[in-house]
Amino acid sequence: MTQPYGNTGEKVLVAIDIAKKSNTVLIQFPDESRKKFMVANKLSDYQEFSAYLKNLRFPCVIGLEATGNYHRPLAYYLIQQGFEMKLISSMAAARTREAMYNSWDKNDPKDAQVILHLLKTGLTQTYHDPLLHRINDIQELSKTYYQVSLQKTRVQHSIMTHYLPLYFPEVQKYYYTSRAQWFSSLLLRFPGPSSVLKYSREEFIEAARDVAGRKVNKAAWLTDFYETAASSIGLPVEEDSEAMVMFRLVLQEHQHLCRLRRSIEERAELYLKDNADYNRFRTIPGVGPVIALTILAEAGDLRRFSHYKKFLKYCGLNLSTQQSGNFRGISKLSKHGNARLRYVFWLAGTSAIRMRENTFRKKYENYIKADPDNPDLKRKAYTAIAAKMARVAYSLIKSERDYRCFFESSIPSGKIPSVGPLRHL
Image 1 (tube, helix red, strand yellow):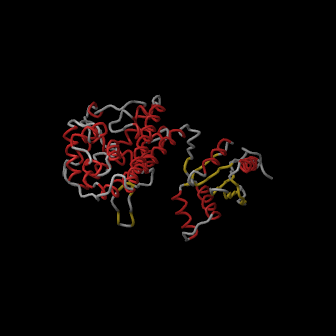
Image 2 (tube, one colour):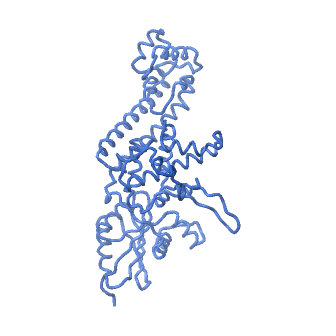
Image 3 (spheres, one colour):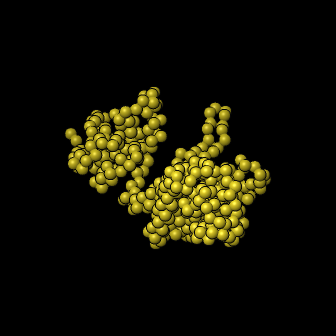
């Protein structure tokens, strides 16, 4: 006879293989019997599924593997209904499936059995719902910014690798930074040598003065640009040709994406201006608005990590070593964590190194002191700085303090020994 809920330590394990339209559910009861059925992604099915689990009179532990964003609505609904939710690692599921079935083949029933096996053995992760933890808006800002930046980069590469080599190859030397919107504005006005040379030098300088960006000596710069157009090897196409029309369309798209990206930056900064964690991240050298936004979006509340090593592992900045018998490989980054967090901490570290004076630059200089021109040593130094950047970000949130430059120098010993992963980087 089934005992009432809460009277025993037995639990019902519920494995869900997520799909776009219908989810495969595999349930194992305390007596080891199993039941399998489908749950469609409809509210009526969600309600029926929730009522069925509640009527089992045993506590349920539900496990699912993240699949795109299709798992989010079901997971949110079940958590709201009071069920315990566990996340299954995609890598763990793939490796377990290969070990259990000795095959790379996969299907929904097989995946549900793999998820159930991982639930039984306790090889699960904590499910962190963005909406319940109030970071959904931050994630959408960050992800949209990333997509817009990605589109802008693709359009930019099209300009630099297709249109300019054909019609104005020499002008690439004036392109200094990816954030130079004036460059595409100038090309939109003067897309080829013919559009420049139809003016006299003085007329061109006057016409281009307002779109040439901030220049110390703008007249001299535009004179050089005019002379470059006069000696260009670009294909001699007319300004009103279809090729130039298409070039201008791409340049207009680039302009639109630049404006869109800037508007998202402004909106994100306005939204997070009163966020204490965001403002605390901004005190770290090399961390700007976009990097601080990305850290919040990808990591959420850093206080949920009980130790900085867990956060480093979440970022994929922890060390792993391949060992077999008497062989022991070199310890290196596992890279099995959040790739975007590793990327932004790497960017923040490289930016901090270029600043005049801070602890990150000092650590980098000490790291490469033995051989400053060694590229492999520089790469390892950048990795060490990225790991330190993540550790500092974690410590600031846990201690609720702003970054203090050269805090180590205030320690009586004058030195803080590196611990954990940083000792080996």
